[in-house]
Image (cartoon, rainbow, N blue to C red):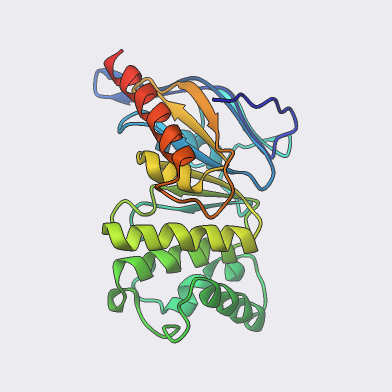
Length: 258
């Protein structure tokens, strides 16, 4: 395990706490979370279910406002959603009445680009995620993996500065999930972005991440971080991979037993 010292972040959470009020109950989702992410870093937030991972990226993307603390993008406080932050959700958040091209072109269109530029941008990312030939298909005509490729293409086409991915492969079968992990790394290599990726899968975290942040159960806090100092592409059976997987798994067990 290594600790990163960095003060110049692309996006940063400072002492963030978040509460939810359900009838007479108060749910403490995040507790004093501080986190910085460098430009073009692929950061993975790892933790068990109900540890505040999604709440954290909802705050960082501007969907939610923290009750305490602040979120900064390029040193400026985030107070609302905006095109500088894109999100890929667990579910396929596509417009069912729009074709693949029209779904992917949505971001450029709301930025006010001319129709020809919207189409050009959409085609670029459709090609990048390997969906050539499916431009005129509707979401119900696509497999789960293909629908998630459309979601990823749409997020990139919006040209965000930071891209959030909230367990985007959790609904996929194992074979498709492995394939999508490889695809997202190819895309990330070609389209340099700051990516914050959420998962509860240790192997996925190691395979994808430059750095892994490990969170505890509610109230969500950051327990430790791991820098993944391995070249890509990574092999699940590599001794370094297995050693890191064991170290993270043991740490997660300690957190769950605490």
